[in-house]
Amino acid sequence: MASSIRVLRVDVVTPFPGMFRALEESIPGRAQAAGRLILGLHNPRDETDDPHRTVDDAPFGGGGGMVLKVDPIFRTVERICATAGKGEVILLSPQGDVLTQRIVEQLAALDHWVLVCGHYKGVDERVREHLVDREVSIGDYVLSGGELAAMVLIDAAVRLLPGVVGNPATVSSDSHTTGLLDHPHYTRPEVFRGWSVPGVLLSGDHGAVAQWRREQVLLRTLRNRPDLLDSVFLSEEDQRILARHGWSLSNGSRRDARQMEVGNGHTRHRESDADA
Ligand code: SAH
Image 1 (spheres, rainbow, N blue to C red):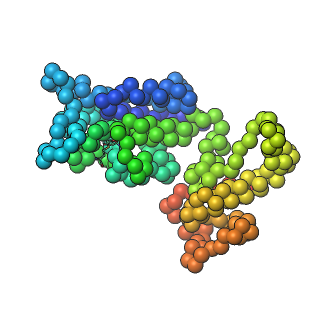
Image 2: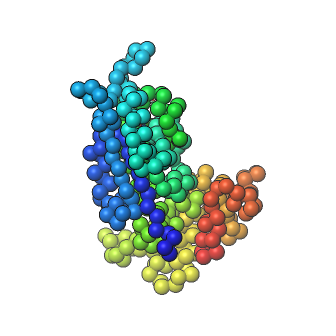
């Protein structure tokens, strides 16, 4: 479909552009080679006036660590937006919205991001107050800089661009995309050190394979992330499978299908129920 050819432009503001060489590999690398991901790297050092090209300074009020200066970041983002258009300006920060597949999906639907990477103690607060549209965290822990977080965001979004991952079914069954965890995968050989692949996968019976996979999806989620079961639509059959393994709908957690469809993006899950 011609309408599905989309390009994601990502401009990154970082004093360490060399770190982004990691995105030359694998799927992000292929997306760049195919022109589906356009990555611009911008060093705020290039927007400084002093001979040392200083991008950080000591915090007002004292205390340890350095803070990225406001002016080089503003100038860099303004130059990007003047040439490439106004993108969604996103600050990577441990104080932001914690990244989920839903946020990745929202962001992957946009055409242009400007990612601002902090370092050391972080960035001057005026960046957050006056330049940034949203703050994203990749989890409740602290990194030394925003670069790896930016790469996490880019990698997660690029694989959702139509056509970047060969078979769309691959992406739509992944963990968290359906709201549940993925089923196990096996490939050749059939037996390794005496450990065999589940027989059903070799049976050629597509119905039985689909049923086994659905069961595994439910059991994995029950075992590893039971919290996820509260926010997806579960068919009667799903509930029977789970009940056989000791799960029960707790009071008030039963939700009807319409309620589940509102705002949580899990409608695809319902379609895959029909397949299973
Ligand atoms: N003093 C700050 C942390 C600074 S860490 C605070 O406590 O909030 C330095 C930089 O690393 C941050 O500015 C941010 O860009 C990046 N960073 C650290 N942890 C991150 C996380 N969990 N998600 C996204 N970016 C993070």
